[in-house]
Image 1 (cartoon, rainbow, N blue to C red):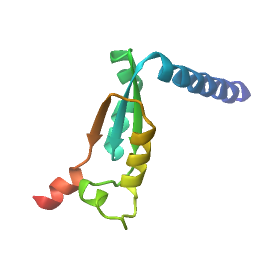
Image 2 (tube, rainbow, N blue to C red):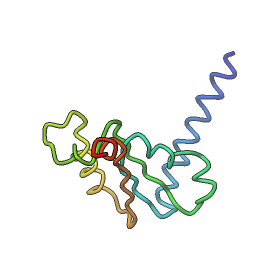
Image 3 (tube, helix red, strand yellow):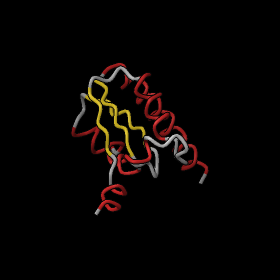
Image 4 (cartoon, rainbow, N blue to C red):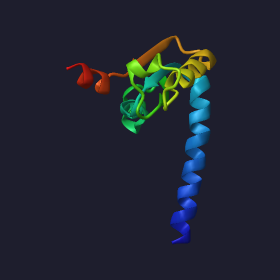
Length: 105
């Protein structure tokens, strides 16, 4: 049991180190959105797009209509803005809208 726990910790540390180096070696793509952007953080994406680093910023419950509301519970706009200002990505993908689409329909 201890071996599995230690192995898990070692693998997590190696993953964190690899992700930090990946930022410097590959082109960054900034992904901003609600919980559905987690698909870009899957290992299969890294395998299928090995020359890109997906910087995924997920704010659960974020909506397009909520971005303009300064009293929004999620405060998604300020989180997205901060990450956009700090990013050097030349490609930005914004994925929002399920709740907005359902509400409008």
